[in-house]
Image 1: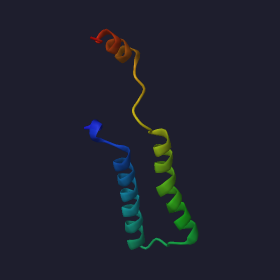
Image 2 (image 1 turned 90 degrees about the horizontal axis):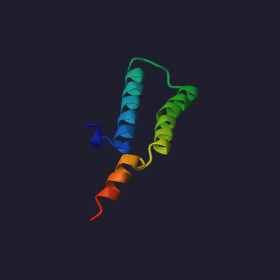
Image 3 (image 1 turned 90 degrees about the vertical axis):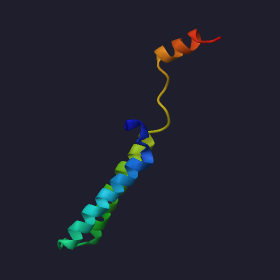
Image 4 (image 1 turned 45 degrees about the horizontal axis):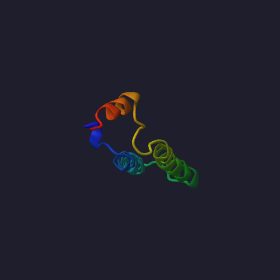
Length: 74
């Protein structure tokens, strides 16, 4: 299951959940001011951007994988 998990799906889920929470809050009567909008923008954008910067490409090969590749050369 975790192999099918990629970075774009996680970011899409994050933004979807936060938009749903913001929609529910506005329906329940929360005020949308400039400060609240800036806060929601920061909460929606900053964590996915940091995750995209950290979660890059495939992990480096381990020593075991390198040794196995050398032994398997035919």
